Amino acid sequence: MITIIAAIGLNNELGKDNDLIWHLPADLRRFKKVTSGHTIIMGRNTFESIGKPLPNRRSIIITRNISYKKEGCEVVHSLEDAIKLIKDQKNAFIIGGAQIYKEAIEKKLVDQLDITKVHQNFDADVFFPTIDMASWKEMSKETFLPDDKNQYTYSFLSYKRIT
Image 1 (cartoon, rainbow, N blue to C red):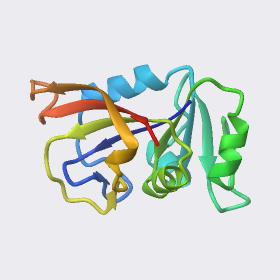
Image 2 (image 1 turned 30 degrees about the vertical axis):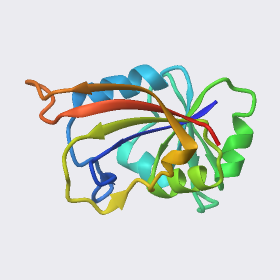
Image 3 (image 1 turned 30 degrees about the horizontal axis):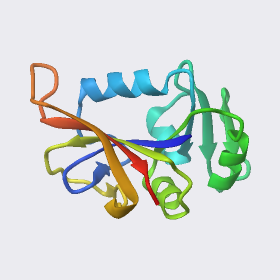
């Protein structure tokens, strides 16, 4: 199963200047819990914004740059090549960026969406693709109010592809 995991604002905002646009510790904890022990697939810009391979995860970076190398990561040159590397795995996660999300959704390469919806509008320059909700079924939703560590209302949403 391939899952897209993303945190997005009310207008599908993902980030700005190759960085996150909010600080939400609960989402970071959830991301770590859900992806630990699995493969994560990301574009080069997403990797560069993280800056290093994440512990206890196999990291696959997609880039058009044929000479790009990063220690502790596997580098491929297309989403299809990344998918070939994980064909025998039970779970893998696409963690960004926007172009990779869009391609994976358009080509119907993902089975599940694991979305953190931050209930706020943000100034962004990168956006999550619009989802045709007729193709997805909401499986779960948990909503949380702001607290002393998380300044925004947010929801954890899980969807499965139905078409």
